[in-house]
Length: 272
Ligand SMILES: *Cc1c(COP(=O)(O)O)cnc(C)c1O
Image (cartoon, rainbow, N blue to C red; front, side):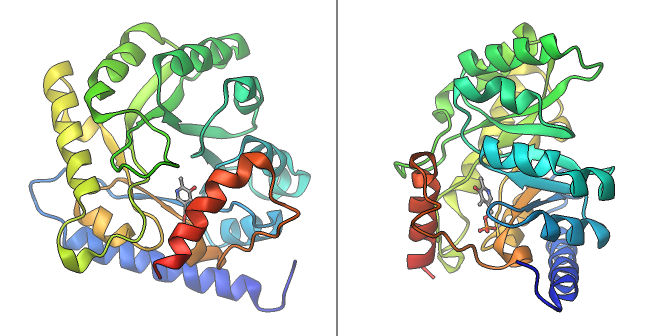
């Protein structure tokens, strides 16, 4: 998988994304909490070597959407020895049978995709059993668009789930709301309604539960819309292909569980 010049390419891509992030931050309205967005480099389908290169260029947060792949990369001996400060975000749909596996992932920093009280309870008790001294940071995934393949809970249920996590899940730390949003939204048409909905969701959660706006993060924005998302107050962007290059899915690699993402992938490509 290794090519000459790859390290420089990743370094340049990372630097360019960081510059674009800072420009977008400077365009953000003053009324929004001035939180510097965290860049999560999404390394799915990409080899451990690329993660190590990005780490060498200063990147610390990485995201994966399949438990198995996350588990393999996070446990990779080269990553473990070369990337002591790496922080992994899980950004995929979590099947209940995989919870223990996720909880055991080394350097797991955040689970961005809690979308039901049942799942929250199970992750909570699994984390509790692990006996970690720190709580596991979690976000609640909100389904902001009607696209079939998206997981996440209906916007009307957000407050209740956040309340549940805060009151009934002592091993979890609620840190924010996450959305994938519709693919290929044309921002020349005006503000992305998914992002507007997320702002409104945060407002409601804060009002109903008495939280400060700047204590509730927003995870939104990917390669094709992270600047737009930051202008709406995103505090956590998940960028893959702009850093690591386009993903290639071969037919043989495609397992039943990766079909959802592949559909997303195709939808994404067809609008470009
Ligand atoms: C793949 C993925 C991303 C990154 O997508 P890019 O378009 O490559 O930046 C972000 N978020 C989630 C949930 C993903 O699955």
